[in-house]
Length: 179
Image (cartoon, rainbow, N blue to C red; front, side, top):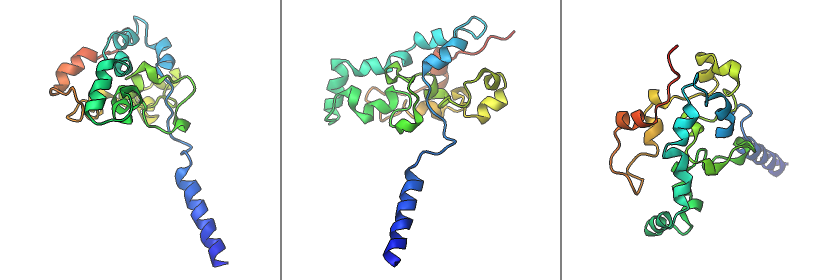
């Protein structure tokens, strides 16, 4: 009897701690953001991202140079398959698949949700139109939290040459134009 109770408790704990949280935000991918963030009214935010190095972050991992860097770092997989590289070159890398929608494409690299958080709960227009609601639903703002940038732009990166937040922010910022 005691063994049965112990087994049930262990099973319960396993299921409880490994099940996805019902209220966890999911990654939806840049294609979910694009329709509302490509207009002049929104400051052509999608185009700013698309022209950035962030949009091509995954592609850099597919190069022979990236594989050479990975090899020198002692990694046994190609750069595009190494968690050590993917964690900064792909939004949502390493996240349980339960938190990634089928429209999310890792090959889109460092996309919106890398800096703004998984968007499933704030992507709706009625939420995005209310800044307070959007933040409450998971929207993060890198302009308010440089730590979102320095999670990747740091000494762990083999190409790190220092990081100047304001200078970098000026290259990627994409504000909504003032009316």
